[in-house]
Length: 436
Image (tube, rainbow, N blue to C red; front, top):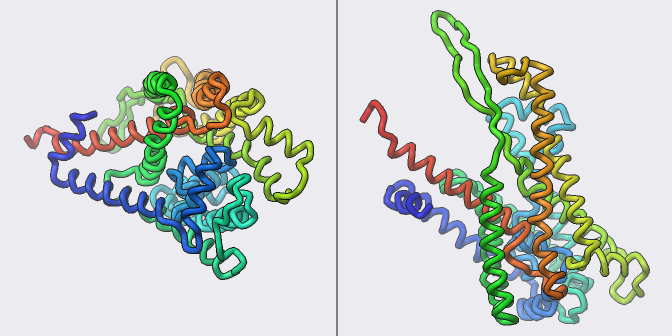
């Protein structure tokens, strides 16, 4: 990995791309720390420190690199874009028009990207409005009595806040696209990686201040988890595919052997995002429907005690089961064995020992079902590791465990993809073929 980066820095055009990407990341981090207009940064920081990680928005705060609880310009982070992308991807299975656009290649993909941008803006307006409403009602930071928005009685101030946060999401989309086009690629994922990595030093320092022994155990556990995640993320089932020879004109084509790679973690981190979002919905509903001075009922007590508290075994069990369910659900709608079998048959491909057509589709379903089970269990175990750590250590109040679950899955995945992209660009520039 280090050798690839040294070679990349030694190549002039790649060095420019890397420096350009670093510049965009610096701009992104500046926006994540810059308070939105009308927000009292001093009071926000006091409430955030008092909160100590107990918040329904911990997932969004993770992706935004802490910008959410700072009520900054980039408070929403990349989460609206992630949600919009997932919704559009799911709609391609339901809406025939979207499915047709997906098959039209680059032109159709450009149209789907445009729809994703529009949906991102709509979701950003909704999320920023909800975020400002919770801050105004004093429910964003729990029991904190500080006035985070001094001018909350002015409608103009609240509208400016919503517009600023929505515009911040639009700027983040633009920055991500700039990295993809003019940088080293993988723009949106790199911004998520940056947001997560920005929180690790502060969270590690908090653990070290509480206990040096716990900090050492966390480092050892982090290394083991990262090595395990890298191993599983690279694991795949390679199904051999043989293409028959075909005569087109006066030339013979085909006769090659290749393979169809099926990753063990075919769904990526999407099931974890689905499960986390669904778990936080009950608490969000309770906060929006119940006033700060209202007496808690049995439902709100149950939600706060068992669903919001991440060290609770009810939370851990429900979280794990939801991840397994969404893994099967997402793989089922994104990988269509019938379409793959038809494509192979159309181009003269077949799996040795399996007849083309329906038998090939049934075989792909069988293999996919066998590798999805360990993939779903792997996702669930990695995601609940920080929760188990909180329960075993008895530190149920501090929920900012930085080296587990969603953070490791995203950071390792993005890191591997980025290194592969850099290595592929190096191979294009240093390839020695017949022209040499």
